[in-house]
Length: 197
Image 1 (cartoon, rainbow, N blue to C red):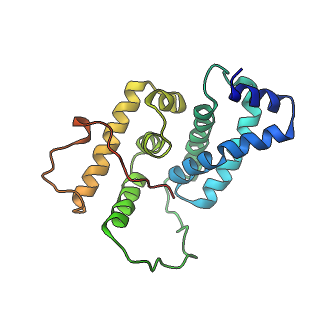
Image 2 (cartoon, rainbow, N blue to C red):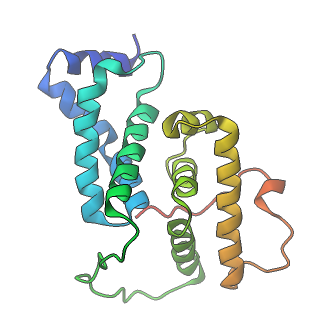
């Protein structure tokens, strides 16, 4: 029996320590995905709580032949989609008005990370989901496909388009030379700087 299956079995038997262990094991990943897809800390925290409620309600339906992490993250992605649908596309309040401005000296890498984050935030929802799951959560194409409920080919297409949109934005901001010929499709997956927040 895998470690995931053993943990789930303990949770299903009502062991509080097992439930705590499951939450502790996945809470940082779930919160990171929610934070990146929702772009607001308070929303992300609320949705992350909903994710774990849904996880515990659905544990008996988890396929023990599959890894637990992609399944948990698929619930996170679906809860984020639902939240976004409820929120609509109307104007949003700034989430960080209470924070003091960053007084640290800026450098090119910090500007690049900010621009990548902004470019990812501007992507269509499904492109942003696969980009975050691949580049920030390190999931393989097959795991992303399972997480978002789409074929691997679709995931690859969305990820390719997301990379091109991010690259176009970076070119538009003058952070990547406009004449650069190395598009993401012509090389291995680019090593995108971490933009976790």
